[in-house]
Image (cartoon, rainbow, N blue to C red; front, side, top):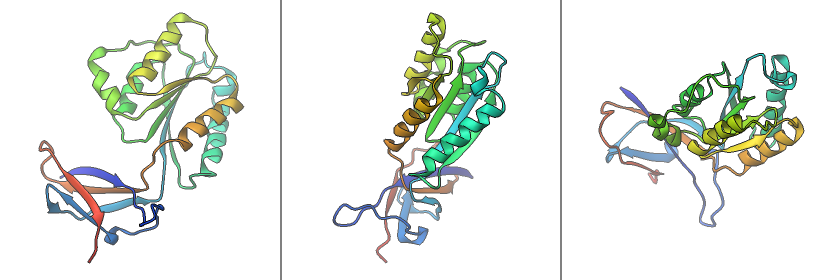
Length: 212
């Protein structure tokens, strides 16, 4: 069996968002076949994957326990609008494109990558489609570098993931920019998962309100 996911947004006749429905309120079909789906969420729940470089060249503000403090501050900012936000943390070595590629293969809504740009690998054009199919990435330039090579790396990481680069030396301003970015994202409130036996076949999924 292969796990699939789908999502949707509901509104009433006046266009107002409707939340807190349950799985039995929906009818979901896969290639016209009714499926029993599990509701993973019934309100906007951003799922954020935060990668951070653990190399010794990272500035102290983004190293070790100070990095945890920054992540906790970010979490507190986001929950003011999205109480159910989920933030996963990955510690990474200085292989920026390798770890960005791994993150691009996930189903998170957003990648945040904090790094100083010291890099021990290279961008591989053969992976472009994987990067583009994944979540957008916010690249945090933790030293506000003026290195041409590092700037080019940051810009490539953002470009192939449809993301942005943020000069992140000022942590307060960084928190403001990241929070603003997340608040402007289109986060589907209703997320469902279900299983199928045909992973290679094209799937047409329909999600609607069960009127029975």
